[in-house]
Each structure stands twice: as structure tokens, then as C-alpha cells.
Length: 153
Length: 200
Ligand SMILES: [Cu+2]
Picture 1 (cartoon, rainbow over the protein chains, first blue to last red):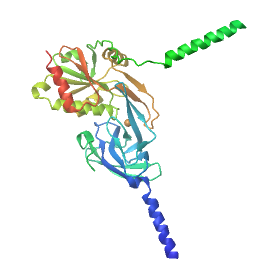
Picture 2 (cartoon, protein in one colour; picture 1 turned 90 degrees about the vertical axis):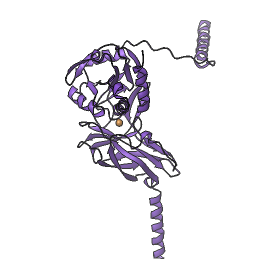
Picture 3 (cartoon, each protein chain N blue to C red; picture 1 turned 120 degrees about the vertical axis):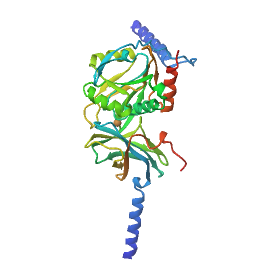
Picture 4 (cartoon, rainbow over the protein chains, first blue to last red; picture 1 turned 135 degrees about the vertical axis):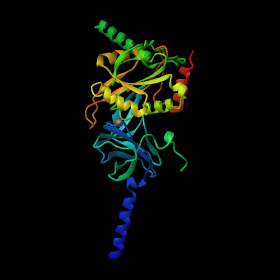
């Protein structure tokens, strides 16, 4: 009996783990943009996919390379580009969020040391249910693939 | 008393008419957008790392002008990288007839020395210049460039600068002739440059 309840507890626990938003998330082509020497801020870009049946919100990001990490977006108002912090980035159920130049991005503000091409920046993505996921983003001069289009899955 | 009632009725009628005018809009035929006021463009002198730079120094070349700032983490790098890539795709003969100038609208933080390093990161032939707030504002007005310093609630502190993200094209005679839209991919940038290069 004791065994059974232990087993049940295990099952419930693993179910709970499976339900965590982070486990339903996959990240494709994460990279950090290489900026000229002296640049103190840069952006990280990636495609975030959500295989779950419910929407997930990315609510924060963290990384060891910069003092501050924020979620940002750009608004193009009649040819004028405005960059603004956002509270969350939504990843729709069975959908994806595109973090790419000119749009949503993770901003690495106040870099502790200059980044070099090929460096790896571990970025921890935090979701609205408290779960998190770490991705390794490579520092690149240009996007890993022109257009960052998505292929057949 | 009756005067008051009349007034009230008149007011109600006026409100109704106004309401109709505001909310009842018959289908309008599609209207062309009003033509933007002609922008004069023209010459200017700013400061580069090696001294004053004037647009007329580049007379005879097609000049691409981009207004931005080096603290811009995303928009400027996106535009400049695409343009630089486009420049690299030109033939050497074409490259000799094209110049690219990055104008910082954030002179408080962007020194000419910093601008040189920044611009050359994207393309060795890209020039970085800036000037006084007054001269920048005056040039921006002539070119139809918008920029505004915005205190933004970002933990990054300080401020961001909202700015026009198009690349302005000046022909070999020094005349403002067009714009290349922000985020135009490199192969389209090449086509746009060639269009102005091959103009009679
Ligand atoms: Cu940003």
C-alpha cells in the first residue's frame, strides 16, 4: 500500500513536471548578434515553439554576460522605429514566437565584457508558470540562416 | 422658458447633425495619399574622426545616408548590415561610385572616434559622422528624418532614440532622390543602388 501511494506520488509528480510550460517549449536557432567593439548592448534572437495545447508566456530572460536582460519589441510607426520593453512574449498553443531583428528580441543590456564571435551565451527563459529553460546562444555576426524561415517540421 | 426649450432643441439637433457627420460615413472611393511635401535635402557639413566631412566631398557618387545611433542594439545594425552586404555584392566598378554615411543623431554619446569604429565594423568604406544637436536637427528637417530621444522605462537606464530607419539616397549631383526602406534584404538593396547608379 505504501509502495502504491509512493508510485502514485511519483506519477503525479512526473505529470506535474510534464505540465510545466518549459517542457513543451523548443527553441530553434538561438543567437546573439555580434556588435562592434565598444557596444554595450545587443540582442538575442531565436524561434520559440510551443507544442502544448495552451498558450505560454515568456515573462523574463536572464544571462550571465550582461548586467540586465529585458524582453523588447520594436514598433514601426510610419518608418520610425521605436524600441520598447514588453512585459511578456506570448507563444500561442501549437504556435511559435519569432524573435528576430526588427521585432521581438531579448536585449542584453550593459555587457560585462565585450562579446566575441563564436562565444556562447547561456540564456535562461522564464515562463509564466514559473518554469524555465536554458538555451545556448552563439554570438554571430549575422543570422544563422538568411530570412530565418521555418522549414517543414 | 420657451426660449430655453428652443435652445435645448437646437442643441440636440446640432448634436445629432454633428454625430451624423462624425459617425455616418458613406463609402468613400479610395483616395491617393497626399503627396509628401518636397524635401530639399542638400549639402551639409558634419564631423568625422579625421575632421569635417561635407556631403559635397562625395559629389559624383551615389551616397546612402543612414541616421541612427551606436547604442541602438537592433535597428541600426539590421539596416547597416543589410546595406553593407548589398554594397559588397556590387562590382568593384560600381562600388567605386557608391558611398555610405552613418549619421549619429546621438552626439551626446557618439563621438566621431566611436562612430568610425562602429561604421567600419559593418563596412570598411562606411563613414561615421555626427555634429551639434542644432546642425543635426536642421539636416534632419531637410531630409525628412525623424528622431526623438525617449526616456524609456528600461532597466538599461538612460534613454533610447526613436528614429527613422530608412536609408536616404543622394545622387551623384548631391540631390536627395529616394529612400531604401528599413529591413530591405541585401539583394534588393543592390537593385535599389543600381537603379540610382544607372540614372542618366
Ligand atoms: Cu531592444
